[in-house]
Image 1 (cartoon, rainbow, N blue to C red):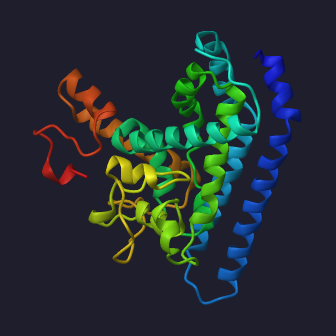
Image 2: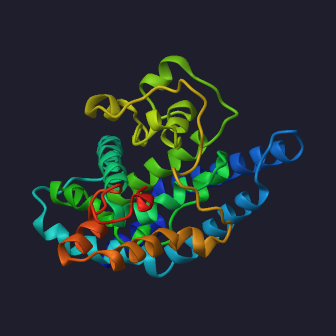
Length: 292
């Protein structure tokens, strides 16, 4: 599949229409919850929601231009290394979404485990609110590197079109789960990523940290030991909250924090480990007050 064919699919393939309908449906859900909160007594940080919406439009602009093109340009040549050529049909779409969901689990987990990746993903976790606009609060630079996690799908034999759309659908699914207006859903919470299981993921409570990474299926968390049910009241946000509604600051504050810590490191090894290592690692000579 060359760039011309790929462009045609993104413009004309029937599934793109379903992605668009899904996108519009999600915007409708966000608008309904927004109005319900506005005309009710439910507490909400309105400036925070405003920042989420601004970040959303920034992402839309970048995805339609520079950032959105990078993954396509990078993934197309990798098809030459594919083991097979998987056709586009109903069953391969089901398989593609399933594998994209598995891919998402590991991408999401790795983003929580390495500080340079957390610097972008922490944008999504930095709100102390939990409502559907949080689904809009995504780093404006994640698109620069998240395509890398789709490389295994390309090597297997999926086209860049199917891999990208599969991951987009996994992400689109997750809009509705960013709400407190839907409680526990019984057996669904044991299989799928639901509002209850995802509230846990956004919790800064010690027992909730680094849990429930799944996109559509929560079964991956059960399989790989990262599942936690919603039990105690969830405290949203980071373990150290950023206290700002500035969209630019929200997107880049953790990069600034990394830079400050790197400057204090005494060796190149420590500098590299500060950037690419675990979130909580610090050299022993760091003041204890600097620890996360």
